Image 1 (cartoon, rainbow, N blue to C red):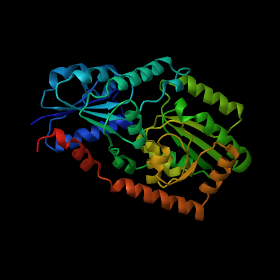
Image 2: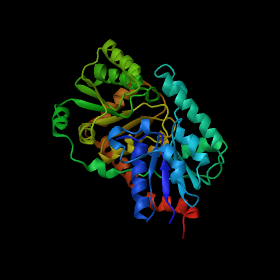
Image 3: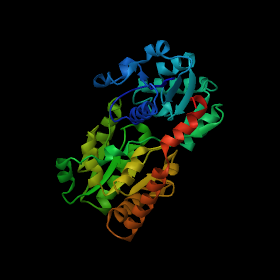
Image 4: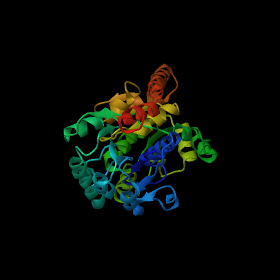
Length: 358
C-alpha cells in the first residue's frame, strides 16, 4: 500500500496550515495509508517534534508508489526538495503574501516571501494535481502558468471551536463595554492601523464605552506592533487590548464576548476568522479585498471603501440588538451551512483518486 506524505513550511500550534495537515494525516491514516508530515526541523515547534519529521528525511522515506502533497505558503527548503522526491505529486496553494508588506517590518520574512513566489513559479508543471483553497488562490496559480487548478475546500477542525470558553476572559468581556474584535496574525497586510483608525471614530464619536481586542501573534512583527501601540497612544484610545497569541479556550471566549468582528485586511488567501466568527454568531464587517468577498459569499457586511466614519456608524448598528443584526446573523448562518454542506474528505479523495489505488 502506498503512503501519502505531506510537506509543510512550518509546523506549530494554532497555525491554519499545520491544523489542516494534521486533519489530512488523520484522514489518510483512516483510509489505510501510511502518512507522515515533513518540515524543516528548525521550523517545527519544539513540543511538536514527535508529530513531524525533518524534511531532509523525506527523500529516503518517499517511494515511487507514494503520493507527496506540498502545502505551498512561503519560501521553504520543502519547496526545493519537493520536485526531486520519488512518488506522484500534489501541490496545494494557500497563497503567498506579497513581500512588499513586510519589507519595512521584517526583512527576513520579506525575503522568504519573495523566495516563495519565485519557488511557486518554478514549481509550475511539477505536480500531477494542482489544488488551491480558494478560487482567488487558484487564479494566482493559473497566472503563474499552472494548469487545471482545482479548488479544495479548507479542511477545518471546527471541533476546537466547541471547546469551553475561558471563564476569566468571558467575565472580563461582559463588563458592559461594546467589544470590537480582530482575529489574525498582527501583520501589515492585515492593515491593523486601519482597524485602529475605525475604532478611534467608533470610540470617540459613536460608542465611547467600547473596547478593541486584537487577538493574534505578533512574533516576527514586533516592529509593526510597536507602531500600532504608538498609534493607539497618539489617538488617545482606551480599552485597546493586544491579546497576542492565545489558547483556544481564551480565543473562544473573545469570540463569545464580541459584538462585531472587524477585518480591514488587504490580502487574504481565504481568511478563516470570518468563518469562525460566523460559527460563534458574531456579525462580520470586512473590507472587500483579495479572497474576502469569496469567503463571505454574500454574508456579513462588506465595504469597498475605508470611510472610517461610516464604518464606525455601521459598527454601532451591527453591534446593537435589532432587526439588522438578526438579519446579518441569519445570512451568516446560511453561508456557514453552505460551507459545512461541502464534504472536504470526499472532495480530497476525489481529487487524489487518479493517484491512489482503486
